[in-house]
Length: 101
Ligand code: HEC
Image 1 (tube, rainbow, N blue to C red):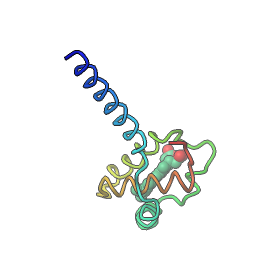
Image 2: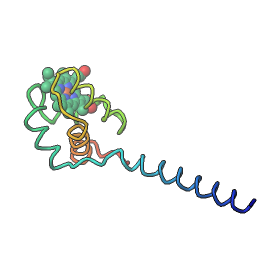
Image 3: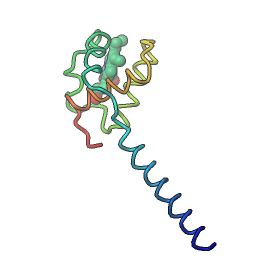
Image 4: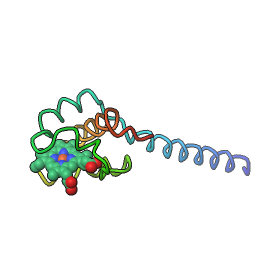
């Protein structure tokens, strides 16, 4: 009986750990090639990509980048969906920001 409980706990702990790991890895699950397409159609009206490499640049982390892309989408009412935002974030990180994730 005791052993059974221990096993369940261990299983629960490893499932939690796995969820934690995958949620972190899931930060950048977007498709950067699709992201580039959407980006090049929708995001270059006001600034070209030199804004992503300016010094100092505003965005300093992967979370910041995700937030920024989402904020632009909301403010500009571009109506991009979550998947498209993920794609754009992946593209921007791969091409310009290069944060570890
Ligand atoms: C209506 C004009 C406009 C459009 C369209 C626009 N942006 Fe921006 N964006 C700005 C301005 C202005 C800044 C600079 C803000 C500042 O310097 O305070 C900026 C800055 C940024 C930055 C931060 C750069 C840094 O310093 O690290 C990111 C990232 C960004 N935009 C992403 C996007 C994405 C992604 C889209 C498309 C979904 C987009 N923008 C569309 C106006 C726009």
